[in-house]
Amino acid sequence: MTSTAVDGAADSATLLNAQPALAVVSLALQTPLEGQVALVIGRRMPHPIRVALRELGARPHLATSESAALDVASSAAPPLILVELQGDHGRTVRMGKAVADRSPGSKFVLLDGGDDLRAAAAAARAGFHGYVVSDASPERAIVAIRAAMEDHFMIPRRLAQFAFDTSSPEQERAQAMAEDLTAREWQVLAQLTEGDSNREIGARLGISPHTVRAHIGKILAKLDARDRLEAATFAMRYELIQKPKRRQDEGVSFA
Image 1 (cartoon, rainbow, N blue to C red):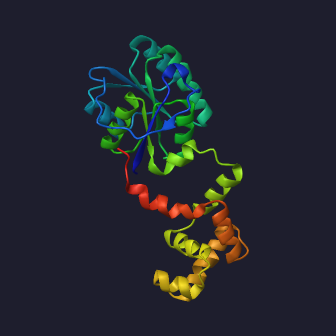
Image 2: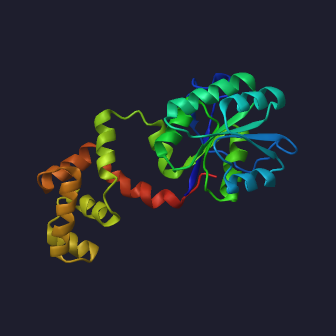
C-alpha cells in the first residue's frame, strides 16, 4: 500500500482542532525514540509494531485500558503514543485527547487493524500525527512513525484526496458508487464519455463488441444509470473519468 506524506499535523495539545495541509516532504528523518517509552494503547501489541518500535530504539509499553494509559502518559511522558482504533472513531479520538492532556508533547499515531480509510481520514482531521495499519510490515511502520515524529502524516496514497476533500455529498456518493468499477470498466466508461460506439470501444481496447456490451451492462448497474448516455453524463458531471489516472499513479510516492 503506497503512502503519501502530509505536512502540518497538529501537536497533541491541540488534538481535534488541526486542519492538516497536503505537502511534499522528505522522509529521511531521525526519531528521538532511543531508550524512550513508546506507549501502545489497545487490546494487544501487534508483532510488526513491536518490531518497528524496537528497531527505532524505543521501549514498547502496552496499556490495555484508558486509566493505565493515563498513568503511563503522566509518569513517562512518552514521545510516541499509538492508539488502537476501538469501536467508533469518536471514542478513539476522545481517548487520544484525554491522554494528550497528560502528555502534551507526545506524537499520536492511530493504529488501525482494518485498513479503514474513513478511520485514517478521521485521524488526520482530528489532529493525530500519523496512521499505520497494525499488520503493516515493520519497514512501513517505521516510515510512518518517523514521519509522525516530524509532524508529517503518512497516509495510504488512495486516501490523500479522500481525507482532505471538501466534496459535496452528491460528489462523495458518486465516487463511492464508482469505486466498484473494475479497471476494464473504467476504460469502457472513459470511451463512453468520448461517444464511441461498441465497435469502436472494442477495437480500441482489443475486445469484442459483445464483451463491450457486457461491461456496459455492469457499468449501468453499478452507477444506477438507465443507459450509456446517462452513465457518460454521470461520469463527466462528477469528474469520475479522472479516476483511472489516479489509480495508475498509485505506485508513485511523494517521498
